Length: 371
Image 1 (tube, one colour):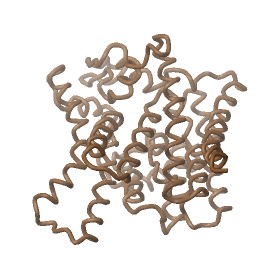
Image 2 (image 1 turned 120 degrees about the horizontal axis):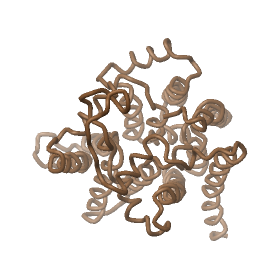
Image 3 (image 1 turned 135 degrees about the vertical axis):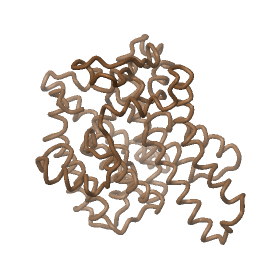
């Protein structure tokens, strides 16, 4: 009986994954459209990093930027193309097949990890609903493209599982390695550091630890440092290779991102852009999670991190590509799954995410109009 129960528990995330894959590959096949598998937008830059390494050169005015700006591939992080490079021989040496094969494979593993993390912490119903919220979210199809989101999710789940597991020095070594790896995968990964900091802060208060000791702050810094170390390693490489420590920031200048008040950027987008634009529908879907499913039943460090992720993209002064930036708010799916709201409300909300995807985002993606 126990073996049958275990088999059923493994079968659930497998079926959700297969349904998720079937939706987007099926629609692509029906429309004879291959953009899901092509090197579109940023994927091309990840491929060039994987093959040739980093390149930086002056932009050509009117072709790829304004005069005096920096072009190349130095705006993208190295972990994903490095993983592809290391494992490319398994896919016949093809970069395209490697990116796709790994995206599909790592997404499957990440689905399994999220399901069993939620199962252990919040029960079977929460695990199923959280996984469905992820699989049917507005921009979840990006997980099986050449973008780095599958790797990001896998490393994020590994980090959470390690963080909440028992263990001593070995656990902290693997936590450190995983944090550095994820911080080299995606720029906003540094925000994951909010989770251990908030966790340690509240645990310290409840245990009566003194904040006035050096050991307290050293322990806190030990959680944050690996998330900072990744970008520092990358920027040091840029300094050695291109004589510009802040090359990535200088590269990003041509996208006109500036620090701004997040709620103002949200309101500006809602009033100036069409309501049913990909950006506005995504901002609303993720934003309403924090309203509809309050009070939150997941750990406070997780929902706080979700809120930080939500606001961070808006602080850059634009909603450009925010639909895929919000894909990485993995605790948002956990909030939905663990919520005490009626199950019919959760299902309706999850289905709404799929409707946004199938009616707005994915059709634009297949037309090469969704960056």
